[in-house]
Image (cartoon, rainbow, N blue to C red; front, top):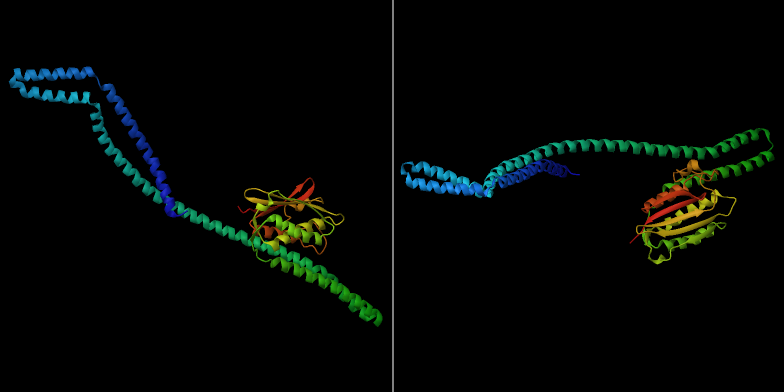
Length: 372
């Protein structure tokens, strides 16, 4: 909010606070004055004053030496008659003076409101800037610490994944050196061949590890295009079925499917489905997993739920299932990046993804913005 806007709002607030009591007081005085005049008005008094005025006229003609005194008394009676017979004239005369005083009071309230608003707005603006500066500095520190924590986590995972194959390579090379001194040439050649095969396997694992990190780091930017989510699911599930031959799929689609539209990157959304299905298949290696995929809609969103009948995610990691390097699978080729990639893609679609446990089975809920 700009300084001018803050100052204007403060001015209006202070002006209302000052002006309302003045307006209320003026209204009360006006009402009290009207009631007083109404109570004071008495037709008999007016009649008596008229009789007195007539008597003074008569006396003025009978007693000329005192004509001046009679005239002065007559004028005073006329004024009294005017007051008692025309209370509105009295009210207007009094209110005219009151309006001047209240007008001056209102002008003073406006001036006070301007001065106080200017002073307060400067103080509020200064406090806001200071608070905002502190908040941004704190946010930058938090961002830096989170970034460093992320890098430390990645470095720890990389160190672990690289160290695993390096240890057996070191042992094999050391053993090969000793064998060269004590074994015959044919025996040494046989051990050399075995060592080459085992070292090649470990190097292959290192290459796959680096490749996975490279793929995670170089995910393509999302290219969104208007599409029907029903058609997208039908198209990609054909490829998913081919890759996961042991899995079964049950689709539940809405009846009015032709009018559903959303913005989707077809290539990356296929990766979303592949990673979620792969997660369920790999988590249940000893059984054929059945996946139920349902699509529902609301006025604002398209909701896709993917449920399987396998084992749920362990409770200790369920809340962090979309974090990188988090996985319940312990095989060395799994690095816990699949669901992290899924969440990144869905967020870049402007949507959300959540994990829930339904009747003891895992369920993923994807929400995408719906086009009207």
